[in-house]
Image 1 (cartoon, rainbow, N blue to C red):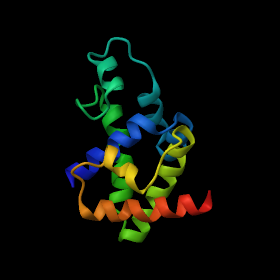
Image 2 (cartoon, rainbow, N blue to C red):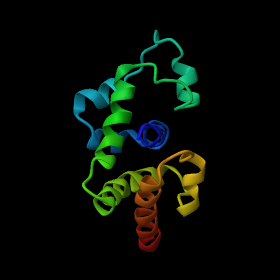
Image 3 (tube, rainbow, N blue to C red):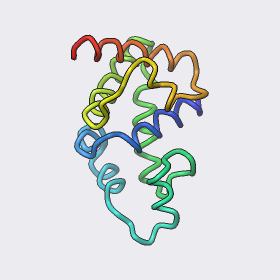
Image 4 (cartoon, rainbow, N blue to C red):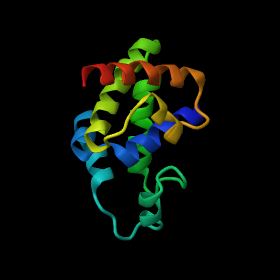
Length: 129
């Protein structure tokens, strides 16, 4: 479960556009995450390599965990896939390559359940495009 939260959190922190984040998160958490904090230690390193070190601020962690649990706490694979599809569509606007195999880049060590959750929305997103 922790590997799944970490993988989804990395995806959110590194690829989710600010507009999508504002739509999906409580306003106070989204704004705290998006606000720049010039005195936060290691802020630049964390931004360059999300997920390799702990997020430097509690708001960053709150965004990652809240988004991940919004997907992982769904009552089954299909509802979780629907929740993940919204995230992938928002990420796709920023990245041109999201495919069934793109999980290899960000999903190392995730559970077979999250792998299954990922496959459904990716296939649907590809069919729509």
